Each structure stands twice: as structure tokens, then as C-alpha cells.
Image: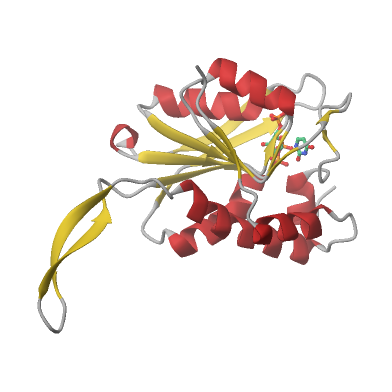
Length: 210
Ligand code: PRP
Ligand code: URA
């Protein structure tokens, strides 16, 4: 059985997502909203991280507190658009390590083409949050996860903003062990592999390219 798909339906996330989808949103506005939503998604995707006891001294007495177990998380944005989540997530997870995965979607074949990969060497010991606003055909996500698994990652979570049903199906067939968090599941993909109704090209809107 495939891992879970969680739709983060928090009102703040849904409100900001609606603002961000608007074609009139400026580059700066788009980037700010992606950043803010990244922070809110970080809160949701870390909700069930295991805690361990730790003894601390308050100014009054010794007590048993709780801290997140294990090594620091890894944030793994898929370039370019995944970087849009990074600052927001780092503001809640300031000690996280960062892996960069450079992939672009060939416009004709829609296959993912890798051009950069750099990750911490001890991925096997860490929880890895893979970040990309768009899960369309899932070719990029599937390739990114394959690459991270090749490098030893075992505990992976995928965080996006919009997912197409076709992309979720392909993702779950290729990586049934990896849970997904998304702010919305849209209707379908168009003939060019764009999410409908979607938000257009996330990387272009974020960086003002086109
Ligand atoms: C976009 C997006 C995802 C990918 C999703 O990247 O940021 O990485 O497409 O589509 P898929 O699920 O069909 O693979 P793009 O290739 O446009 O690169 P960019 O982020 O550099 O613009
Ligand atoms: N990549 C995007 O940026 N947008 C889509 O709708 C599909 C893939």
C-alpha cells in the first residue's frame, strides 16, 4: 500500500495559495507567498517527528524537557522552484542541512534532466524533506527521490503546493514508501503537462523569467 497523501487545508495555507494562483500576482508577491506557505507546510510536515527526553536546568530547577530525536533534517529543494520553499522552512528549521537537486523538465518529452546534485554524505541517518511546489507528471519528483535513495536516503517526505492526480498516481507507483504533503490536488494535466487550473510555471513566476 502507498504512503499517505495529506492535503494541508489550514485556512492560512488555502488563503495564501489563492492569492498566489492569481495571474496578476507580482514576482515579489509570488515569491513572498511561496516563502510564507513553505513555513506553514514545514509546521505540518514535521508534526509527527519523534521526540526524546532531555534533562535541562531552568532558572528554578532541573526538569525533563523534550527534543526532536536524531540528526538534523535535510531540506532538499528541486531547482529552481523548490528553492521558493527554502527560506520559509529554514526559518522554522534553522539547523537543517540542505541538498540541492538540479532538474529541468524537457519541454518535448516532459522527462526530467539532471544538471546538478549536491547532498550531505550521511543521508541514510537523516529525515529528508524533498521540496517542489509542483507535482505534475511527477517525472521530476520520481527522479529526485531515486537519486536521493541511491545516495542512501531512507526516510523521505515530499512537500508540494499543487499536485495533479496523474502525478500522485505515478509518484505512488514509483515510491510507495514516501508520503506526500500538498496544499491542493488540482483537476488534471493539460496536453503540455501543466497542472489545471494550477498556477502556471512556478519557476518562471518566482524568478520573473519567461
Ligand atoms: C517544474 C517544477 C517541477 C516540475 C514539475 O520545474 O518546478 O520541478 O516542473 O513537473 P513534473 O512533475 O512534470 O516533472 P521545471 O522543469 O519547469 O524547472 P524550473 O523549476 O527550473 O523552472
Ligand atoms: N511545472 C510547473 O511549473 N507548472 C506546472 O503546471 C507543471 C509543471
